[in-house]
Amino acid sequence: MPADAPRALRLELDAPPGGGCALAEAAFVPAALARDARAQAPRRVLLVTSDTHRGDHLGASGSGVPVRTPNLDALAARGTLFLDCWVSANFTNPSHAALMTGTSPQATGITSNDRALDDAAPTLAERFAAAGFRTFAALSAHHLGDAVSGLGQGFDRVAWPDASQRPSGETLDALLPWLDEADDDPRPLFVWLHVFDAHLPYVPLPEFERLGYDGPADPFDPSRPPLPFDDRLPAGLHGLRDVEFARAEYRGCVASLDHELRRVFGRPALDDALVAVVGDHGESLGAHDIWFNHAGLYPDTLHVPLILAGPGVPAGRVESRPVRQVDLGRTLLDLAGLPDASFPGRSLVAPAADDDGTRFALASHATSASITRGRHHLVLQLVDHHQRWHAHDVELYDLVDDPDCTRDVTDAQLDVARELRARLIAWLDAAGCARWAGRVDDDAALHEQLAALGYVEGADASDAPLFVPDDCASCRRFR
Ligand SMILES: [Zn+2]
Image (cartoon, rainbow, N blue to C red; front, side):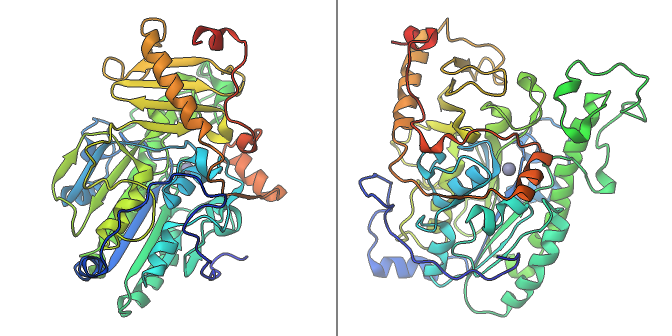
């Protein structure tokens, strides 16, 4: 299917194939109440996903990172800013598949960037379409396009690049004419805009190059000593001599996407729209010896920005309670006056009293998994991978004492580790109840593109049990 092709609406299923899987469903809402909710609800819903966007790279977050995000900050000021939003996957397509189905990656079965979400999966766009919304998606990465990801289901129009990626300015060039047309259309509208600027190769708009950088004029000056981790730098940064330059360019990329977003936030027809901005995963800028990619399940890759604004959203509020990106779809449907639309998740605006804020994540290719509850974050390696992580190893961190997860406290808090590990394994065992793992795209050009973006090929473990205990020292320790 070529880019920009319309995609037919899909047959919708209310339950995943196989049945028996307890997905959360919205409570029954009487029809008159639902009509009333819809009558007062916003007619425009804009969901922006910002790829590879760290949670601390947002001016309004108060993190102290010298980044410039005036447009996102203004959105946060007129809405609610969630300071502690974590994703359930550290790769683009698994995270977006989770977001668009309200279902974590261990249950969608989408754990890589080359596997499509099956048409049987009920998606957020399908829910909006079924309620009479027009649905547009404008995307900035080729592998997120419908042909690879399957995420075009439910959208009337989808645009994505033939090249591996494009700057958000070009994606907006594709989207804005559609919005011009829709301005005169009485039907409600759901728009998904995906921006990829913060992803490698870190090329900001010229005005944001070297943002906050005061290092040498040539950060690649070969007369300077090589960095000790030179062999682990991504392709575009080979030969870099000053690591702060890459961090500055990353900040510049975030400033660039913020700058471009003014073109859509500033549209009068969207003044009373419901707007959400969320990351799909973060980026590791050197923590845990992970240099400029999003491997690993640490706060660097799991913590993302989340802003909600518009009708029904408290204005000027800053929320510090832990929330899950995977709950955003449910939240948007509720706020759009569609509380009776069947879709998993819990509203972020009206938190349930019985939600203890536990969060789970599954790494790309199901190589590791994590659970985060209260002050503790536990990572369990599922297989040997990346030549550094060993199957069944456990790490436990105290996020209050050590928010960057630098000191493993498994030995000191073995009881906590035992309990969290058991709960994480139970979560992993729930895999297989809602498998929407569709076709794998084995196109050589796609895989070249993915490799150039830094995606290392790995086994896709989504067809096998995710955790099988053995007699290794780690498993014996937790028995
Ligand atoms: Zn991504």
